[in-house]
Image 1 (cartoon, helix red, strand yellow):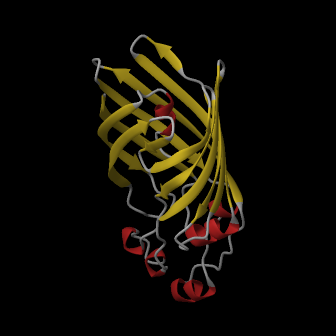
Image 2: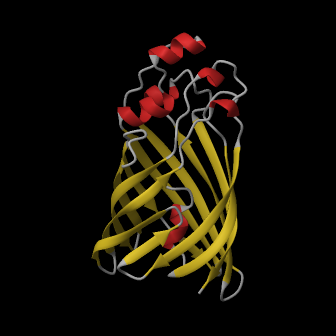
Length: 236
């Protein structure tokens, strides 16, 4: 699930905005990441843009949809961003682009979503499978979007972002680590407040819990990754 994804369920058909996000890294002595968030939400029933993802519907009704598209995966590791002298000797890990197929179901008791994504840039060879549930709660101009979900990552993904090769181990003196596939449960609370007919503010907090070989990596000292975001949007 991408950061702030739940908000798209309540957004107007077309909105533009800008925000800022902060993410606490799982890596040892790694600088926290503060970054701008461009907000683009466009959906004409055939094609959509949702911040860092875009695609087209192959099936679309009032309460169900199947879509195919692409999403930018922001995961990365830059050795120089860590103050740990051993991590500074590891190889860089790059962000990548995922090709995805996604299913969405909207009901009177909430929204269900699931997707499968695969790396198409041959960086991580990731395969990611996600499922989540969102229950929108509206009170006047305020919309709350609590979400729970779980993500499965294959061994290629985990080994790329959390593994340590024999060569890296010899160079850094960190133990060799071959990371297998794992699950990452997560929770998010998003919010949107309508200021006027056109302007709205949004924000939220998202927490991922690394498990298995991802959490056990010698690179990691924080298995609970917190992200916070906020911004302003203009609804057309």
